[in-house]
Length: 475
Image (cartoon, rainbow, N blue to C red):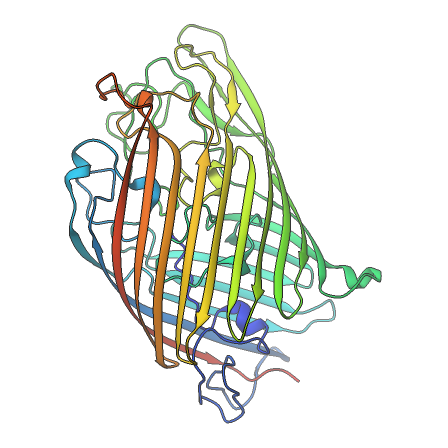
């Protein structure tokens, strides 16, 4: 569920060295200008097999101190959550009693490496990123990104094509806004400059495919719910079907009667406008997902739905070094495409839970986030962020121990001081709230409201040590 995306010396900034950095001025090289990305440099580019190659390594060592005034984490046996995941704010049960907890986290520590070299068919670039944030409750190594670009073509593992990566707020919080699609999927895409077809410069069209999972609540007459320790883009999983001797307590078990089925890759297209002062994207998405199985009542189960989405997002420079981010998205079967709900099986659900043969229905989703970054001085900056995410899940009244997700709010404000390019220190206040349908929680005593809601307030203090190195640019 987390991104661990350092705002210091990123690969995207390396690729566009003329643009301002997010850190203070540096004197690492003699020709470095104020507020530009600069590196210590080798005497000359590398020569590999007769071809000149630029290389670079960057990274950050993070230490976060976290204090939650309210409960966070749906499983009362888990350690403190290291990200403010709004979908994991407990509304009912024993987990709500675990408040006023303090913890520490190195999870955002990361290491990036890249290379690029010119070819007769365009520049070839490769990029990898590693971090320690595979899980939200403990530290474990993972390959976070790995992709290559060659001219217009890009393929590998990266943030979903649905996401405008320039519209990522500069937060200290590892999780970020609830609606933001920090999920990562294998993908291939073409980013075509329209200038090649006599259109104005700074306009692009992106066409791509990727393979997210079909994040479905599978139909079953008798259902149970278990919380699983899954990779960080997942907070919990609804397990369909009663446990039996064939599966025991194996957390990899989902159902011996039903299985999700990705009928097609997800298709994403974008119009992109990126002048020096902004980066704006209009995106469209289509996917076809379904489920197959064999109900105990007999026969074969086969149901599928269409998923679609439209998103508009942008980052625009305002006054001085300030910038504003605005983003919104709407569609159906987008549960796997939002930061806080990937893994909650909110792409689609059966129309009726008392009928194991009921067809699937896509769940409507709407999300938005906004942020403003202000530079107080050349070494002091702040960002305020708000996010909202809602699902039309009222028909999915499955009884479970955590409730059916309706909507959540997210807010954060920080102040970050960069006394030198290699050190960032900051403090952030974070707020999250989560609402569930009361009917979906089997232990709620009637009568009562049609929903239940809970919230969390968090203070985070962060120190980050940054480092970087690059070979000279190829003439």
